[in-house]
Length: 313
Image (cartoon, rainbow, N blue to C red; front, side, top):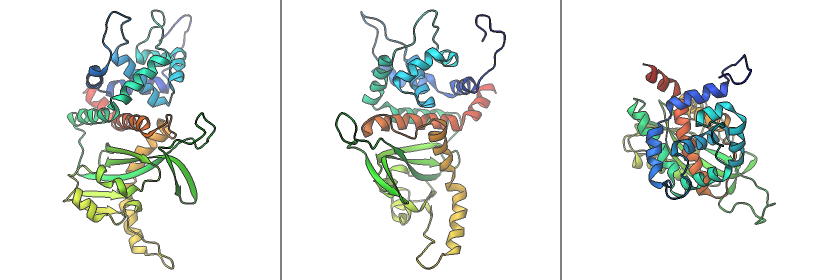
């Protein structure tokens, strides 16, 4: 797009990314989900459209922006304004207070989890279906451990845990991922000190024939079969002992890892692409709502190429 006296232009990676995601997001279904809870026009100033606020919210998740930062980004980036649908010649960008109130509305009604379900139903309608294999895993998302705040204490809803020789403080995101499509079908948020195996029953949808996981889920065969009677336990087994290494079991674990490692692609998008490596809010509920919404966007990102092919077919 040329403005003023500009002669040269180039589609940036940000603009290309927003163009791809714009075609993949089921805007109508998601707006229908939010509209019953959204303020309606009355005698005062009419509210900003649901879709526009939802687009701003998704921009926050994709580029890891706070409420003030997304307001500044809208004034700074033409690509973001075109995606959201803002013409600064006619109207200002929504301020940070408006963005904050919309986020609080999503948190109050716990719409993040419903967004994930809505996106998954949309993808199944497009032929991207949840199959009978599930990979379970968890990742730690850090929280500030400093006590230099108003309450002079760390967030009481988050805890610390030791991984290897390193201590971490924050929350733990547990996910159940389809082994074929790499779609997140289930997500659970707990404090970081909760063991991975404790939430295993909540990560299975019950129709599995195979369940993969690392050694954090070792010894959970009975739990797996209780939740998914037809499932085979493909979680890793212990192979290293005090005085020796079971090379046969180690080799079997490597074969299992060819499937289990696909969950790392999901975490890579969540943390490296979308920047969700630290919590932004206090308390589990707010951060859980953000995680569920981010999982929905991760699913759309993972299958965006297929969605684009279907849109142009």
